[in-house]
Image (cartoon, rainbow, N blue to C red):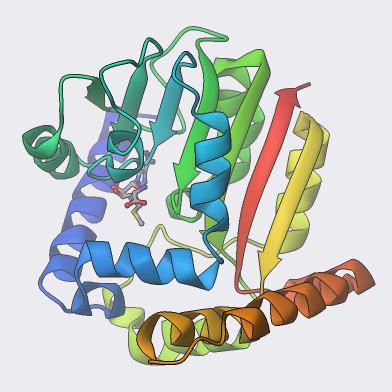
Length: 259
Ligand SMILES: C[S@@+](CC[C@H](N)C(=O)[O-])C[C@H]1O[C@@H](n2cnc3c(N)ncnc32)[C@H](O)[C@@H]1O
């Protein structure tokens, strides 16, 4: 990619994050911790659980599109021997991330589509709601993530999907003007195909409308509909097995051993 193109992308992302922080987009109306909590509730905590399962103290972890590096920071503790590295194209995010960060997390301004690392450098690569910001996310998975991962490495990600009616309406009616031009929710068919051609094993958890809504109620109402959420998620997984996954709203994926 030319440096002109990279500068344009960086400016555009910085502008988007600024608007978001000023509350001029849906995601900007609530603070980032609350947004993260909502995301976790919407996916039954699956993304956090997968990170917990794979971020053992001796593995080297790279987070792409890491923002302020919240995902990494949660795992930086004194006993850790493996490296924690975050990259983001936004210089502003990297500055903010460094302010709140410990020395254990290294933050680098870089494009996830052209990672500045040697082949097979990391045991784990994580992308928390990053892929749908990349104009050519397939290229990022097929080339860069695979290249930089160790041969037995794990790629973990979470992203919104294209055909979910609720998020489609939210994006088009509520906040089209504030959306980054580079941001397009993922096509679930392309995603599955891309991953299966790039990794030995792929596990995808799809989240629809109902169980996220019930799970969110679980967080904000005085009674606990938690069991209903678990049941609904099970029904939704069956829908997925029957081929109805295109309507899912988000996905959490774990792909192991790049081919
Ligand atoms: C929705 S935010 C997610 C931030 C963080 N992962 C989190 O969960 O809070 C998406 C991030 O991707 C970054 N990003 C967008 N395009 C990128 C690219 N080409 N390379 C690296 N980072 C990028 C943005 O700057 C932004 O910080």
